[in-house]
Image (cartoon, rainbow, N blue to C red; front, side):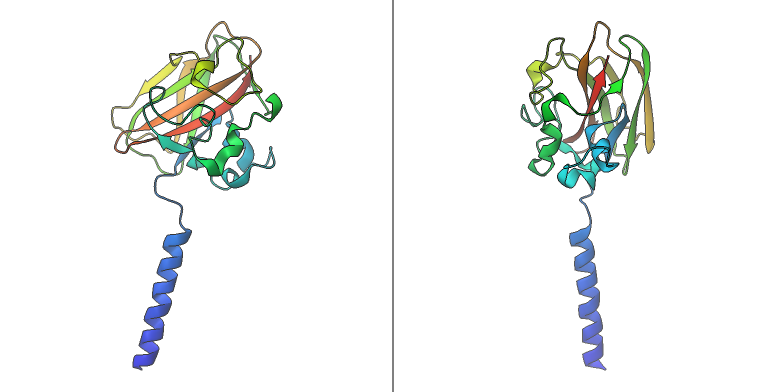
Length: 197
């Protein structure tokens, strides 16, 4: 009997260890799907050769404080995570783009697998004349977000929609960067969406 109990305990320990090792970190939890983000395009197989992000579109998490801090230029869409570098690859400007209208009302939607206490959501857009074939940098973005939604520590619903307006004065191909700043950690989530005005 003691031998069998030892085997059972060992088996339970291995199962517990495998569960802990195979579980994504508790900090991996959100992305935009309207306008559709690059990570969602990868997850739904609209775009191929996406690497790991196709299995965890909610995991583009990096340091908060953007634009003063946060991921380095050229690594913004992947939130600075090398394992998601495919999100920073501009693919020659060929990512599928959502058609939008300059200055028009829009419903920006996030999907969460965990809804952290939140500071705010900020939405940035690229400047007129930016180069859509080069990785995203701070210099390519308008310096101020065109939409900020404060949460003051509240938790958003698992599907969250922000009503706002697309920025005015934009034509052609652009990128929208959505940043979800978590209130009770040092992290934020980054989501890049290609759009065509």
